Length: 487
Image 1 (cartoon, rainbow, N blue to C red):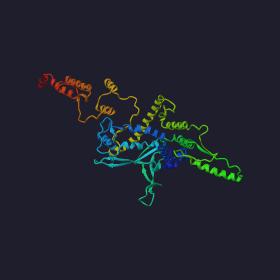
Image 2: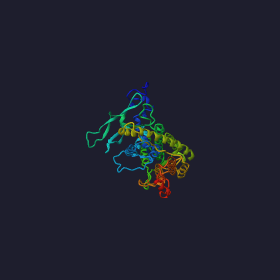
Image 3: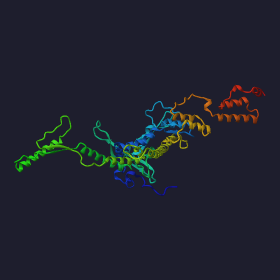
Image 4: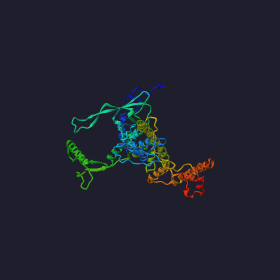
């Protein structure tokens, strides 16, 4: 069933849809790219806010879930993307240079929060076994994107980049610059596009810094006023008072003398400096004073702290400002704010995982085995988990029968507690199998022996049970086993 309505005009470029874009002309795309770059580089509060969002996601471990996936498929995706399979010991490649790694891709993908979008072009290659691999996901910086071609249903068709040219005819001194003319067109089947808060056909997205823009602008102006006030009033203002004109002089002579004194006093005041050899020579009756501020200056620190708190609210990081000497609130209140913040990080991690799963992992599997082949799933980290897997909790779950011990669980716990990876040749039948399972196998074997007849001898039954993990001494078989076998 085809769509009847539409989201935007067919094949319209997002750069022409200013009526649907931001209401602030200074923050309309693509002019917003320069502003967001300046905000994240110039302001310490904005930089702190972004680091609080980025670093937990960069520090956490992203893995692959290979349940229901053929081992060769899971192994190929794991090695190509440099992502460990959950529950399987990670085997690092011999070399990482020139290979795609998810750890290098994630910081660039998170820039969708800064600019509203982050675009990558898929670049494939063929490995030595004839399988397609992702050579790299080439980032296409937001400042190079001229427009987004959008279909009437809101789906992305392609992006267009600005052309580039040499800045000077002299090749030795020239550099590549944008021409401002639309050049390269990249179709959507070659793209991986992360968009923050996309609404309909708005593939430019909404920057996380957009709600903080007003406060950042006011804070920037307030800081300039504060610096100017400190510069003008911090050391006082030198004031020169001239001596009275000589007695008996005519009006014209007094006027000429006062003009000369004013010029001389201005030179002295402007040249006033502090130091071991500093000083001033004044005529009789003249004076030079350094006058400080009279009255009270406005308290701009309080105003700047207010702007910082409002900037932090844009990313739910206002708890970082609590508990200081000049702040309001308490650490207990900060715990409540932190819970909301960690929930937002988990939602962001799921958003990144969804895009990467659909347009990277599944495309890689489709290119090699077709669309009917199950693909491994990327598992985002769980940030701020409320129930850590302690040794006591794991033992209680095992004793209650809620979970069973297996190599996958052991590998997960070794990774969580920073223990060494178990050697691949290590084996211990007493610990690798569940005793309850071994007992169940032994009971089945014995029931088959007793119910069917001499299909299995007791020695055969004991050997099967022992191989299943039951602690049975094979040399302790009853003496009548040989007679039974002979019969």
